[in-house]
Image (cartoon, rainbow, N blue to C red; front, side):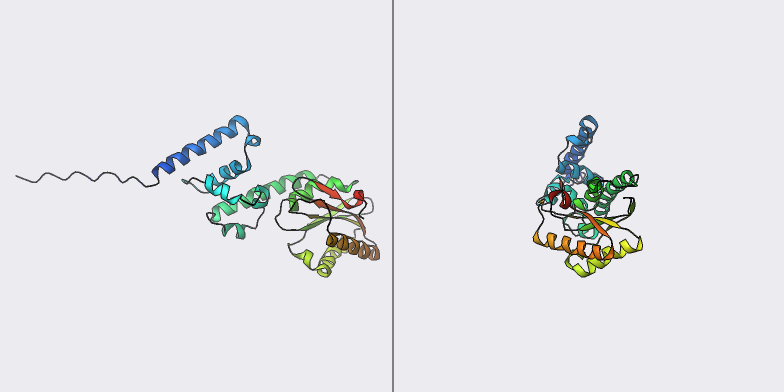
Length: 241
């Protein structure tokens, strides 16, 4: 009598099966929430979670989203250098590139709208562009808009992080652009990652130095703006210039 054929082994169930099923259902609920209520109804960690869903498949990314936002803001996180994002635990090259892409698209949308602006009659009209370029950054950065005598916009520039710590080099870079474009005025801006709209003593000293160098070169400092995620302050309007 032949031995009975052994039964096939039971299918192996992954240890994280319930996590995968739960993750799939939660992702569907996030998408349904977007379609029903719009993105404005979602908290920052939900927005980040939804974004990570497209870069990190088959994993519950809710804990990762909350962890990344501990001590950080969504805007600050998205505007980090991609090379720095990759070093974050749980973030690989796909997620880092997608997050950087979102920040870049946001800046492009603002630039397209602001690109229609040919003339600047009020320096504070430039706040949306400054905020999109440097206002969300987690480190302090500078940007400038160059103007001619009629207030026409000749060019814009964002300076690399760290240039503020070298005042002489920074001034050379700033006015090199002004002289090349034959600008007669400039609007300077920098961000305060901590959110304060009050200038520091270093801010005041730098503003004075830029104004003095500009006067010698016949390039007026029209205004110096402080931009944050929520607001802005004008040196000119506040009487600091």
